[in-house]
Amino acid sequence: MFVPTQPPVAQTRRSCGQCGTELAAGAPACPACHTLVHAERLRHLAARAESFTAERKLHEARTTWEEALELLPAASQQHAAIAARLTDLATRITDASHLGDGTATGTAPVNGPFWKRWGAGTGALVLLLLTKGKFLLLGLTKLPTLLSGFAFFGVYWATFGWPLALGLVVSIYIHEMGHVAAILRLGRKPSAPMFIPGLGAFISYSRGISDPREDAYIGLAGPIWGAVGGLVAFVIAELTGSGTWLAIAQLTGMLNLFNLLPVFGLDGSHGFKALNTLQRWGVVAAFALAFWLTSFKLIILLLLVAAWRAFGRDAGPGDAKTFANFLGLIGLLSWMTSLRAL
Image (cartoon, rainbow, N blue to C red; front, top):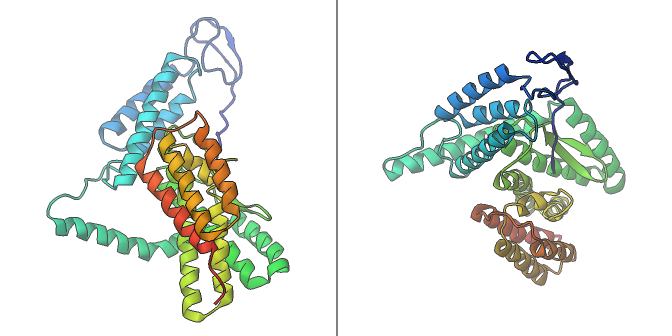
């Protein structure tokens, strides 16, 4: 689970340089003459953002425009114009992340003969496999993650024994690092994962999201990584005949499937924001099929909530990649919940 938060704005008191009116702390404009308090700073930020955009450094451009947005009155035309720019940038960054074409980072896409394209993709995959373990260990260097993780582990050790408790902690940690990886890829700065005994874990970051596809990309990254972790546990169970590893795989499937619930800010709710009405009903049908095949009762709750959201008027623009990820997760995680002891 991930929680977007807003950063505090520095509070200062001053007088308007144009008419001398005393300004309230943190006021972005003079209430008397409407002069922008940070006009010079805004011009500098706008120039920097335009320069970054021209150089195709979209992450830097978005960060600069977001800084400028915090210095403007919410009801001003400048605020609306910059908000529109941020929406466009979010769409372009999400498209670049989905396509892997290098637009967001300023690097050129790989073109040319098929063997060059395949070679580049294979190299990226090998690099991913070699570095993923190091990336996962990175989160364990954060003291809040370690302390909250140990507290979480202690609570479940007393109930389930240490092997299953440890497997549960690792499974949830992998899930949260999926969110972290997606947030970093989109040029944002996430917090360290924090465990909450009895509930799970969460991460946060300090910038809002304007593109529903970006929101869905971050939200579904957790269950995707969690599902991969569950598959690893299943393979180990098959190789060793361990009932504990099989239980970890099944529990991982249950936890990540529950996170697909499209409500309460869970990952499924973030994913639903990008789906149009037809795609939402496709998800409902997938939940119905999953329940028919597995008889896992939790899916009934997922089915009912998804149908309720499909009837709503908050349908998104539609996104084929998000829809495909949703369907794939429903199938894989539902299968994992139906695993039985060897």
